[in-house]
Length: 196
Image (cartoon, rainbow, N blue to C red; front, side):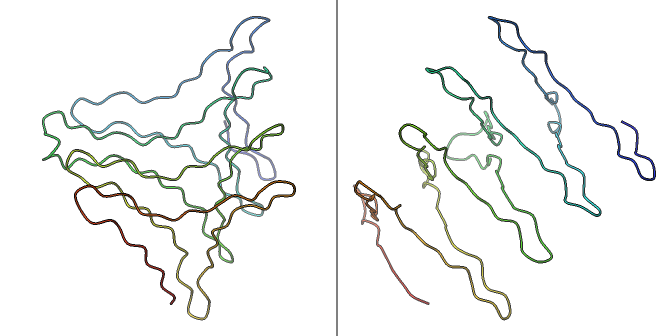
């Protein structure tokens, strides 16, 4: 759309499929770049405009809602690209899969927060959360997991960390287990607790 005037807004744009009728599904929507034969695959960039005297624009990715009593809401999948070299064996390949990076915005005062929360179950359980690395390949190790707060500034403290189960009003509270994996051909892993 065209640029806005001196005191006006730029135009809006909408790309949408039509609504379905009584017994049909709505249309699909696909954005993709073409495959490459001798080069890199094309990039896709989705960017919201900056704010000058107000806040920057928001971006929302939301899977579809269902009102059916026996159906599940839409699934949202964010997956990095594979790196698959068919000419290399599993023991000699140095190809690395694509990364996924989620970073909140920098602030001249306070930086943006990152919140990951499972869905509320209005009638039964809330959703589970799993944080794990994939199993190692034929001759490799599984990935590490690192959870830590950032270092403090010149005159500031580093952030705190809390691992806790939730409160319960009429039932038992959840348990907590910290353990290392079992080893069949080597020593079991150690657990070390150290204060600064």
